Length: 454
Image 1: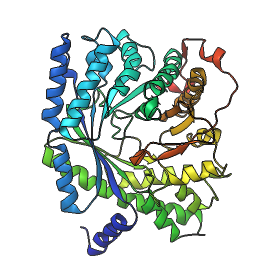
Image 2 (image 1 turned 90 degrees about the vertical axis):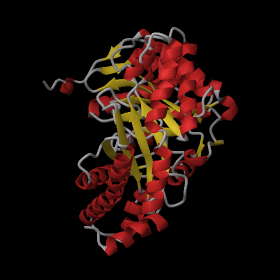
Image 3 (image 1 turned 60 degrees about the vertical axis):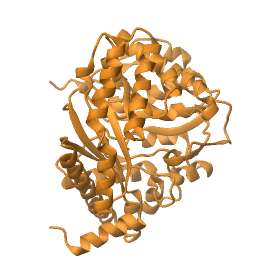
């Protein structure tokens, strides 16, 4: 039973502390759309997505009005398009045509993003996988709402270094294709190690082949709520700190559980998971970096940052799993630079570097996220950064990712404005020493010894 105090508490979190449901994401399988005829394939994809999700936005708005809970985004994820388009697509333009179909149906339904322009290549690439990857710059420059992701490694299979090298080149090419918009296409492109099948957050969402035909996944976010709760226990012991984070995460997750169950019932689509990720926004007071400062750091990046982030991430997960039987996706703390005003402040103060961010990704929920770098950064250096991050995920049996933006025409000391939830970012320096010979070796980095668990 929910008592009056809990209702009032939830209302305060929404009104004063930036609590929101960040996204309702409907996952849709397109496996039954596969067709060797490209025209029929495009028609089937449009029809399946439209019929499945045509009421998604309306339902989200109704739930938001009735319960007074802000639901910021309504999104769709689909089966990785490399799997769906392999029988029909013979050129990069064919695959880009599928991206345009996804963009059109997303526009017609009214969702803000559609994810799944994706390939899963942790051990090797099929011709269709490689063709889709090579089409990404064209696809993202020709669409507005399509998001792309590529899984390059896993704890079970190792790291596909051929794909890592290729993705460094693709990220650079995507930056060039969208340079008129400050290389914005790269903000819709993410590479993963150990990508989850049920992630509701963009740009990495896709509908995994282990999922049902349709599914509802909800992502909840409340950095401001956690920050406010910690202000009440300032100076207390770590035990008190941890208990406070756990209790707060529990309350936030219950809000997501409520929305997920309502959306599932009204849309007649099975409930998948609640993803409790402390995903910041550029809004003041909605910052993961500010939580780290409340824990006791002058800036994110100061000595102790990795330990503070590890504590935060673990307690968020512990509180969340008690609030829902189906916590999934990424669930923890995100540390994007451009989307978090506290992170931006830390970069500008000189407290936070790319190398420190990499260390922090060992204990957070995702990885190097929304980081702007100089436009003249070599593709091989980007591949090296990706390889480092994939290795962290592979060895630590966790999801890691890279969403990095080489902003064409800009360098260290300048800033880039992406707008909306994407915020703005200072251009961060990249280590100038070469890793080209390493990246060019080719082949795979084997899975670690602890991957053999049968």
